[in-house]
Length: 195
Image (cartoon, rainbow, N blue to C red; front, top):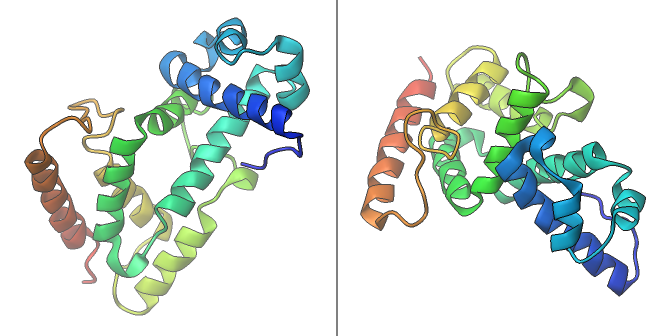
């Protein structure tokens, strides 16, 4: 997320707002989040928040698109090993369950159908090119690269905080996570293997 240029004190306030608001939005969604709670917990005021983000929607957008960039940068795709990518996504959901909840709120409150983000806001292009190249090299099954990516991401979310079956936590025993990682890796490997 692109932070505005601020003095050290302003930058600290900006960061506190983002940190507090991330938790607020992850817990309550866009409609349920309250600016009053955010500014109180961030030890600032509405005028400061609005000067940085414009409004509550602008604040959510800054956080949400920042979370998408974080996933792209922290868990970069390796289309030659989509199974490993799925496992690394699983691990990131354990580290930052709040970020995956933000995407769930976008789906629930903004975009109930179609792609999660609009065309001009997408960060998928790099991933889709990588998958298409792996397909051309005979490493990944044929088909729409977007569908391949969607399937791998969906499989990586099987135990995520937004799973409708079971939401895993980092506090579970390591052997449970290792078992899930192995199953996920093998399942994705088989699902995307070239014919």
